[in-house]
Structures are given as C-alpha cells and as structure tokens.
Amino acid sequence: MAALDILNRIEKDRAFSSVLLPQAESNLSPADRGFCHELVLGVLRRKMHLDAIIKTFVGERKLDIAVRNALRMGAYQIKWLDRVPTYSAIDESVTLVRVARKTSAKGFVNAVLRRISTSDALLEFTDEVDKISIEASHPRWLIEEWISDFGPSDAAKIAAANNEIPKVAFREVGSGNVDLSAYTKSEFVNGAYIAQSSDKDLRDMADAGQIYFQDEASQLVASAAARDPKGRFLDVCAAPGGKTTLVAKAYSGSDAALIVAGDLHESRINLLRSTFERQRVDSVNVVRYDAEKSLPFADESFDTVLVDAPCSGTGTIRHNPEIRYFLEPGDFAKLAKKQLEILRNASNLVRRGGRLIYSTCSIQLEENEAVCEQFLVSATSFDQERPDVPETIMTNAGFARTFPHRDGTDGFFIAEFRRRV
Image (tube, rainbow, N blue to C red; front, side):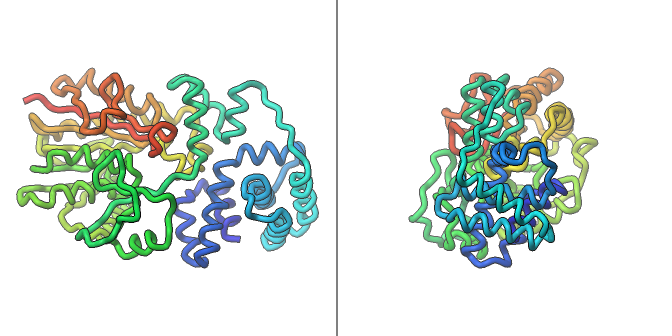
C-alpha cells in the first residue's frame, strides 16, 4: 500500500520520490522497504510504456489515479520483475484497489492484468522518436531537445540510461576509521566509493554519520571547487549541503579559511544546518538571501565562489525519474535566465585573481554552455579556465560534462572562470 500511496501523491501533488520514499520506508521491514523502493522507481521509470500497454487493453477509458497506478504496478511486475509470480502481482493489485476504496474496480483490474499477462501488447509508433519516447518513457519534446543538442544516437542512449538502476556512490565522513575495502574507489574523484547497491552495512554507516551518499559527479563539482583550499569560500546555492561539507573538509587544515553557505528558503537553510550537524561540520557560516536579487557581501570579498545553480535536474533523472514528467518545454529558458542572473551577482563577489565555478545537474545546453557564453559577453574582467577534472570529461569548448550513458554518473556540467588581477 505504501508504494501506491507514494505514486498517487507524485501524480496528484507533483511530490518527489526522494522525499516520500524515506518517509514511508522508515515504517517498513527491510524486505518490504527494498520492494517498495524498486516498485515505485520502476513504475516511474516505465510509466509511459506501461500506460501504452494498458491502453491497448482499455482503450480511451478514463481511469481514477489509484486504479491506474494499481494497474501500472501490476503490469510492471508482470513485464519487468521475473521474481514476482504473475498471480501474486494480479492479486496484490486487486487488493490495492479494494484498500483504496475503489471496490467497484476490482474485477476490471483483475481482468486487465490477466489479459496483459497472457497477451502481448502490440504497440504502434508514429516514427522513431515516438518509439524512443514511449519505450524509454520520456516526453517526446524532451527527446527532441536531446536529439537537437546531442544527436539521435546519444539522445536514445541518454533516455535508456535514465531507466537503469544506478550504482550507489558515497564518501567517507569524519575520522577515516571505517573499513571500506569491500567497495570500489571512484575513477572520477578522489575519496568517492562505488557499491553495486545499497546494502545494510552501507545504510548502517550512513545512519551512524560515517558515510554520506553523494553521486560521483556531485562530488566532482565540490572537488573542483576546493582545489585551492585557502582564503574565503562562498557556496551560493548550497542546500542540501553535500558539496559544502566536502569543501569544508578540504579547507579544514587552514586556520585562515572562511566558509559561507547560503540559500533562498528557510526550509533549505534548515536542510543545510541539518546536513552540517549530521556530518559534524561546524566551520560553515550559514546565510539566507535571494541570490537573484543581490548577495549581502562586499564586492570582491571571496577567493572562490561556487554557483551550483538551480536547474531542471535532467542529469539526475536516474535517481529522480519523475522529473521528466514535471518539466515543461519552456522551463529551460526560464531557468537559464535565473541562472545567468545568479551567476552575474555572484561574480561581483570574486576578488581579483579569484575563481568562479558554475555548475548544474542539468545536461541541457541552454542551461549550461549558453549561460556561460552570455556571462562572458558582459563579464569582461573574467577569463574562462579549465576545471580541475579528468580529461575524459572535458569538452572542446573547455567545459566539463558527465553523462549517465557515457560515464555511469549523473549528468553534471562544470565551468570555471577567473577574475583578472
């Protein structure tokens, strides 16, 4: 029932699985917790494909959200989870609609899922883009954006990679007394480790504050920002704080260092403080502000400024599959305008000879290269520099990019600028 409740809330309230799953799973047994996680994310990753299958058996019939999600859950188990017996998947879905007080739909759900289990849905596509869109469950307009930016082959690979279960990336927090020999060291960033899945040992270490789950690409941004750990550092859009704490660790040996982190909303400020507390980081000064309007610091007062800008999150769809359904075609332009304004405001705070790092967890050209190009037109005192990252992820234009289909990480973008002396 927990999985159905989560899927219903995502559908009705545009809520996020990354928030709802931990809340629900805290009340479940370890076995149920894992199954709930797999079922919710699996349905979200395959939602458009599942709906296309269901439609072949129900036509244009209008379905209640709870009934549709029960059908999606049953169809997902039948088509993608070999270890779940078909009769169990059907019976559970029928039980769910009854518990959800949709008793009149019990027979309908039972009949539809039985037909799905015994017949192949013959899906028809208008063209190759439609086929990619439906089978990989990404809105057509988004696939078309990626085709325009990266070509049809990479667009298809990106969409396919977004539906793969990502490996678990994490880093050690604290004293260094944890045995991590069973896990693989990252090839991208020092101090990062990779596990095939989140096991009990990892969850226990995370609960004890010994490790912190953070994608390799996210760690790479913080590592690049902290390559010269001295002087004054500002993380402009800092919540939830994972990058800030990694930077603070690099700066910990400098008595003269000053680290400031800020964000817009009180909830995000509270999230920052919670992250710092869990990781036992007490060296960061927290400030609340609206970075689109102004920043409450004197010009040229920081040696390094990091702008990990609010973005569409298209690089994190592996971990947050519902993002693809929440986005609208005009969002990238709106976000780019906001990102450019924040970057320009932040640039005023960089001292002469200091560094400005711009990053997003988006793969869109509009939010990344285009923003940087516009910034450089007006920021005549800044020069572009090469970020401190592996050569394999550098672009011909001097920026850094990771992709889920190529690098096995989330899709991040990193640019670096230096103010002339």
